[in-house]
Image (cartoon, rainbow, N blue to C red):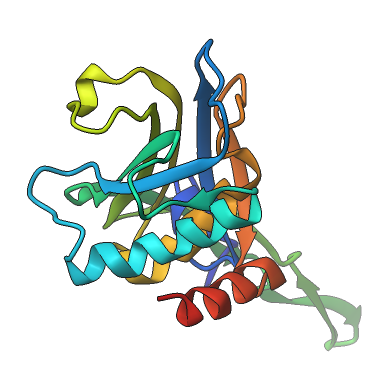
Length: 237
């Protein structure tokens, strides 16, 4: 009889993350030496081939503009803003990840019953017989290992906010960078529409703030901040 023991997972951390109720987001924010004179800003696309009229750009922008509002930033429409914020986003090509499960295989041994018959000459032509049984102990031992290798695809989705000292008429590369905030998450989903509010929620406390190093922020799928951000963003123009 063969018994399968508990599966030992050698590499399955991302697989487990895909089933988790939280999404890990990496936040990396850096600040330059010059502070913005105030928190008025103008909003621009940081991508050459994506205009501000693109429907996805407009949808994704609403999440981060809501976050900026929470942080005291005021969007200016008249071109007199102190800060120009360039917003870009994307998702990487899929990367195949392999994981291996190693399952020990066991078999049962022993448990056999042996019958012994002992005869004895009692004299006078009489013979007595005594029957006894012996059962060997039942035990199991490992007889091999079943190794199973599988693969799945992961994507890295990201958003970048880069704030510059705004000089109308100047090119982005000609303006001094004030701060830059990058957020990303790696997982099986490449659905930016589902992930963008998660990225914005994780980035919220760190926009325009120097994190000193990349931080991993876990955003629960039912986080009240995430739910509220989605609600407010739907109401934004």
